[in-house]
Amino acid sequence: MIVVTGATGNIGQPLVRALADAGEQVTAVSRNAAEVPDGVRHVVADLADPASLEPALTGAKALFLLLSGDLHAVGANPADLIAKAADAGVRRVVLLSTLGVATRPFGATRIAMRELEDVLRESGLDWAILRPGGFDSNALWWAESVRTQGIVAAPFGDTGVPIIDPADIGEVAAACLVDDRHVGGVYELTGPEVITPRQQAAALATALGEPVRFQELTRAEAKAGMTQSMPGELADDTLDILSSPTPAELRVSPDVERILGRAPRSFADWATRNIAAFR
Image (cartoon, rainbow, N blue to C red; front, side):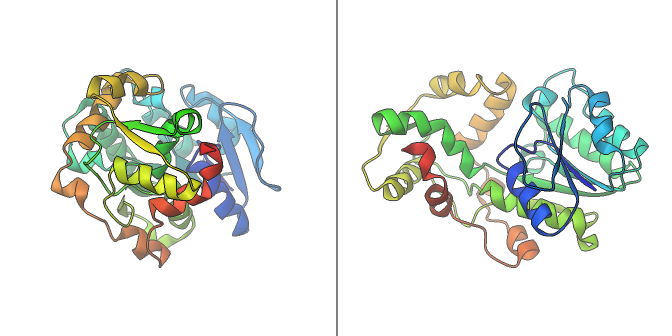
């Protein structure tokens, strides 16, 4: 049995499908009731309460650990989740970390994530660590404004990074959960090219077949929107990267292709598959 936390999200859904399609027994964990593929067990649990995860871990051999926003906040102790997994007899944990652990290691949220990585390394379990940068699916923040006004509003319109399709992260995670060759691996996950918000708006326009206008936001305006769904410090960390990416944050990593045997999907591909959200 493989347990997937965050199973209804942009990474969890393709991960659950990939594992189920491969014939693995899967337990999908989310905070709320949700539909899952046929044959997949679903358990409601809140990772902020590690004890609530115990029923999902019974009989599990591997765990995909994705932290919700509140588990990045000051005072959270996600290391308890790794301890629960070890106590339940789980043998392997694949942790979704962040590229910022390597590229900007001194912010509070990144220090906390690095500490969690170290806990996992020292746990005695088999492990793999995934460090993605920005996600293609962050473009869903623009869905309402594209639908209602034909506008993509974002800061730093001509500064790009190699954002990644969450489906690629899910497929990499599936490989790490089942393939012993990836035990002890730390993988930096990016898309195939650097792309700016203005270029993303153009890709959405192409997928829609109608104009989409780009509107530049100030940093303060962008932060105000982001803090509706994440801690302010995490929003600042993200905006620091988007405004002034380092050479390491601009690097296109080979790790997706090494693991999956194909190039990462482009943002244009993501936009085409998800264009219904913008209509």
